[in-house]
Amino acid sequence: MNQTFKEILLDRRSIRAYKPGIVIEDTLIESIFKDALRAPSANNLQPWSFKIIKSPEAKTTYSHLFPWNRKQYETSSFMVILFVDKSFAKRAKAIYDMQVNAGTMTIETRDKQLNAFKQTTMADADIMRTAYLDAGLVAMSLMLSARSYGLDTCPIGGFLKRESEQAFEVTDQEAVMAISFGIKDEDGHQTLRLPFHDVASIY
Ligand SMILES: Cc1cc2nc3c(=O)[nH]c(=O)nc-3n(C[C@H](O)[C@H](O)[C@H](O)COP(=O)(O)O)c2cc1C
Image (cartoon, rainbow, N blue to C red; front, top):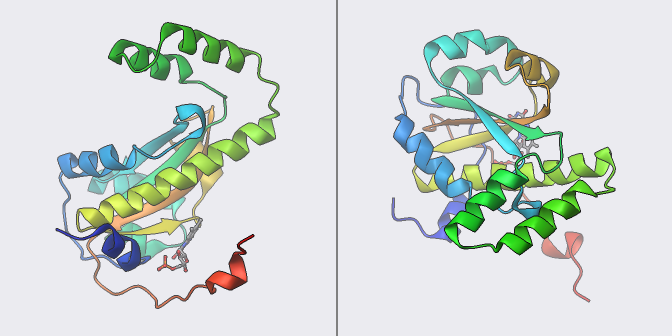
């Protein structure tokens, strides 16, 4: 695609209608994710997981989760539902072991960190707040990564979250948002942003 980062950032729009019948290869989906998964997360705990609804059969099975945003659901090449872990540091050991094995973390640091997690006094609400922050960062990374491969996206909060958790039989995760992916068939809205000085102050 040969776009600059600035073009990717400025040209992204929420796209609500996609060219029908465009099949995106699994390898391309994997590339989009591989780049996006470089997103930062608190303590590098990566508390996210994704259900990718791509095949016509899956689109039919999970259609009821999207009573709204039908056009995105029906025309997109694939939909992603993003979940976050409710249990804090669920993957800490796996992630830190991986780093120890790769030589990017010492055994002492890993053990110190794992021990600190065991003794955490963080309230459940604060744990979820952090997980949702992490989810927002990876969601944005996914949308920008998709643009870098020529795909368009729409972040979607309007879908059935509790029902999504039931449909995918997750008990220890919350559905946060969905994102549609495809090749745009119509332009996004011309949305404006508040000016810098309305939202930021330099001290
Ligand atoms: C958390 C979140 C939820 C959203 N939910 C929806 C949605 O349910 N349906 C929709 O069409 N757009 C949804 N949007 C897209 C916003 O309407 C859009 O980002 C905003 O109007 C700015 O437009 P732009 O993304 O084209 O720059 C959502 C965006 C965010 C960040």
